[in-house]
Amino acid sequence: MVDQSPHPQYRNEDDCQAPSPSRLASAARGHPMTASVGRKAGAGFAWTSGARLFGRIVDTIVLLVLARVLDPTAFGLVALATSLLAIVQLFQDLGLMQAAIQRKEVTSGELSSLFWGVSSIGLILSLGMFAASPAFGALFQNQALVGVVAAMSPILFLQALILVPTAVFQREMKFKPMATRRAIGAIAGGIVGVTLALLGAGAFAMVGRVLIDNVLGVILLWAASPFRPKWFFSFASLWIFLRFGLPVAGARALETLQTRSDDLLIGRFLGAASLGLYSVAYQAFRILTELLLGASNQVLSAAFARLQGDHERLRRAYYRSIRATSLVAIPGFVGIAAVGYPFVEVLFGPQWTAAVPVLQMLAVLGVIQSVRYYDAALLIAMGRPKVGLSIRLITVPITIAGYVYALQFEDLVVFALVQVIVALFISTPIWLVVLYRVAGVKPLLILRASYVALTGGAVMFAVVWLLERAVADWPNVLQLAVCVPAGAAVYLGVLWILDRGAITHIFGVIRERRRRGKG
Image (cartoon, rainbow, N blue to C red; front, side):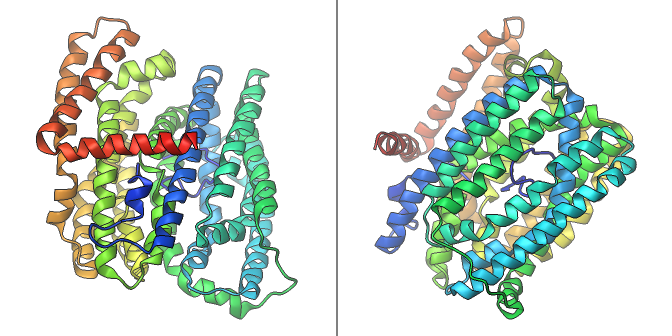
């Protein structure tokens, strides 16, 4: 899986179209959060969702332009370099940000130790990545990769510099500075990327885009942050964070291996051009995922952390989050699966048609993620981060083995199919058992929270799929003009029959976001 995001280790970071701020303030029916946490969560939702929406709009525009200017090989080179960067970056994060956010009390001396420790690691890794770039070119039998890896190596140090300020903002549930940074970085990076692409920079257009985004991130976050590191460092203080963070880092390392091994295998054995097709499909999926799932994960993770110790309220917040996610995200993924070909040809151009089956299969994965997006966040809030690591120890080897097996087919869609099979038939059953035993989460209540959206999505897919074939001879734009409104009408019709409150909830979210946008 590929992503040329400014945070290469978090392809699934690594959320949902969350409840409105008023509902975030009351994450569980009959069990409201404290007023202060509710207000902060509501404000956090507004800033985070607004920034993500704006950033994704900019990212989408930039991707569409780059896809028409650059060839698949350029995308593949950056995808391969990004995956290598993500793996190296595992030795930098070590779960330290999550540890700093989750820790109830933290001193300035501990934060200073964390900053100097992480910054030193980031600098060493950046220099090491730069020095190793020729070796990577030889390993993947592609000398063009050498320059791309070398140019992207400073990202490791730049991201290390913002780890502590970001953690401080999230601890205090102050999301405005991060939202501002995201919006400005998206605009500036997009302008640089498109300009370089039009000037013939090739893969380095995307490299320049990511570098500008990260440089601005450092400048803007430090300008807004009240944190200033002291000239103090203590291994004992750093160990406080490592002790909590290492289990989280272990799970993240396994996840990164799972989500990046397909890129590495495709890039090594099928070539950069094939990886470029896979890259564009995955970037389109990622944009859709963050639009549908990415607005509130940051906010709800922090809100979950504030509810530590109250397992009943955590469970109720979890169920409500699933319901909110499913209602908005599932029809989006289902729609992409149904109208994939006209969608890609209109937006990206006919040269990317080979990426459509991959995108459609990833849309199925998105439906699964819509229901399971908060599993790990719930267990972390309950103080059980090691559970995620144990599950990854089972699923990662199976997934990687599936990727290796997929090589013999030389078909990119098989790699996406492996992810769907593992998620649906291996990972989900294990998580359901674990959530029941550890957190008291009942599978029946998960189904109850998502069945309306799943049913509406299934009916919507059947109708749109049939309709799309009936108008297959029409121009692509007209196909979308007919199928998209029809799909939306069918979905809302099913919701009207099964749960009219769901429609009220969806339009309530829209009204709330408009109101806050005007404010």
